[in-house]
Image 1: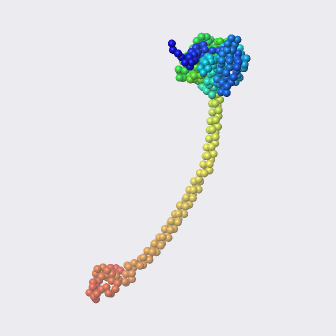
Image 2: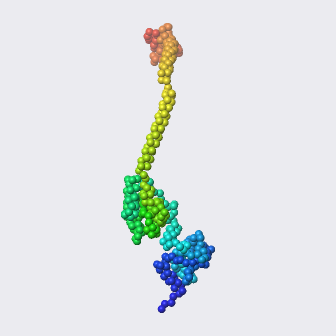
Image 3: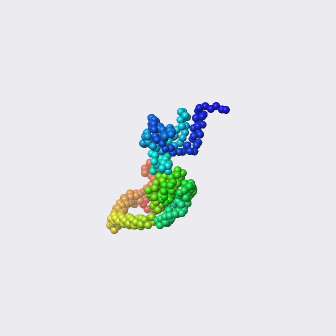
Length: 390
């Protein structure tokens, strides 16, 4: 027979307690005593009745704002385990409520606190609804007035939209699982723009499927925004807290997810009138601007007739100036021609002078250039003749 250490036995006892389905999730009612809060913020107390007592601990993240008081009758939720260091069997509490609430309400409050702590209710994560959806998923029972009301309202307000029905039971055993499956089937479609989860009013027991943790998480995990329309306006379920929007009734949910075609038509008509008026004003302004620009251009156009007359005057003046200048130049040329003519050799020869050249053609300007017997050529005004120097 093997021999075990104390630690091995304690560990086995702890694991056995934590595997027990009853002890891993249970509610315990009793009277509180020996309440103590540690410096780390954890709360320790004892739950007892006439026959027994049970050590209990709430860790800091589960401690409520108001601690249970000694002598107070409460109902606590948690699980049983063994604190190995001391060998104490303890109830590890995650929620404590005053005695007197029903078990269903206690479970609702516990789940609500749990999901809220995980952030499933945060407003920051909630998505806006599409303004003009094309396909709307509806999770509800195929029987009853709820589906009829949704179809009627959507058809009246915005018949262009398509409804995709995911039929499911909305109460009774297995309803929660069917609701989860219906949501998953809509999530498998990539073109669903918004989802309505709906059922009519009923008792707390009738609405219990919508307080199931699996349903709340399925709504939270929906790819498309979800509108909750469960029960009457006074009924509150976990789905209401998790959904992106809550509607007081299924009909109100249908009105919430689709626009009103009559309002759209009125809006379009008003917008059209505003657009036409704006265009008319813009055209009038542009026409006035063009008119002013044309006036400014006309004022800046030169007087062509005056410019033409000025050109004619300048042409006449230039012509007269050129003619006078040519006449003056002509007279000067004539005078110069006369001067040149008076200085020409032919004119000199006509007055009785002659030009003597030697036989080689060079002019004789000095007697030293010739010798007796040299042949010469004498030029006169009307010709030339030869001769010999003596």
